[in-house]
Length: 121
Image (tube, rainbow, N blue to C red; front, top):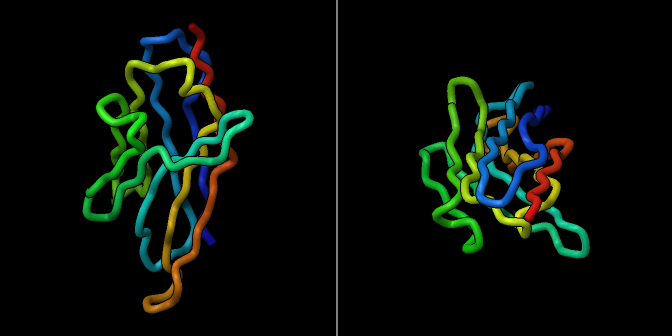
């Protein structure tokens, strides 16, 4: 119902910055939370940051003060600005969107295809 297209990511040196973007398209009554998860080799997928339609955001402790999530409700996009990157931030980052197709229905979730972020030391 909702498709996600991610952009950004790449290779950066420690201390550098990257910006991830995710655009949602398709039919939905409402898009609720938008966020980013990451999966590093040998680790479980973890929430990086998410933001609700009102703009309230929460972050993983490991990225607080370094990453900033933002969204544009008119364009259905969510961005993740990552500053002061560390080698331990290396992972595949996935966009995640929770949305409702019809008012009152249980929310659905869509995932992006993932984008690689590699931070060299």
